[in-house]
Amino acid sequence: MLEHMARTRSLPQRRADRAPATPVPSNGSAQDLIGDAIGHAILFGIIALLFQSRIPLYLGAFIFLTDGGRIESALARIGIRLEPATIGEDIVKRSAFWFGWFAFLAAVKGSAAAWLAPWLPPGEPWSFLACIALLLAVVEALTALAMRRALPHLGVEISPNGVAWTTIQLAMAIGAPALLVLLGFH
Image (cartoon, rainbow, N blue to C red; front, side, top):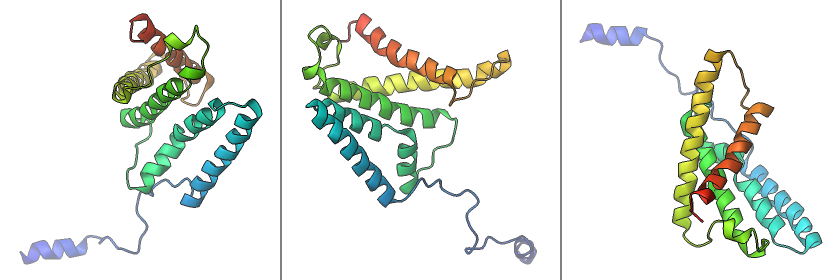
């Protein structure tokens, strides 16, 4: 027992005054977040007044609430850290994007053209929209994971912030709702 205690004392001890090894990412304080929200509200509010429509307000809320960096910093503030380039990070960020996108489309359904309104998602069963958003986020995260793993073996390198990656995501963002409409989920 004494030998064990002597060995543990000889090991370097963790000190409370040292900084943590992995700092939590901080993208600003709560005042920055509130200032950003007020800035978005003012900008899109002015645009809404100019066009005499609520759609710019909905678009501003969609852009503000589905920003991946803002989601990550909000989660970091409450102690949840997302690992970069993992499937969990993709699912969290993309499910917020897809749910926000469906909520935006459901909100503008009344203002849409007559030929477009039947193609937009219904406004009521929000749990159904959340399930579809989660399903699409999982499919998109698995696709991104497959691309991250398969493309280097093929000798192709695409940056997640590059034009090719964004083009693939845009094709998925347009193709997935179109596929749902073609399958009859309208």
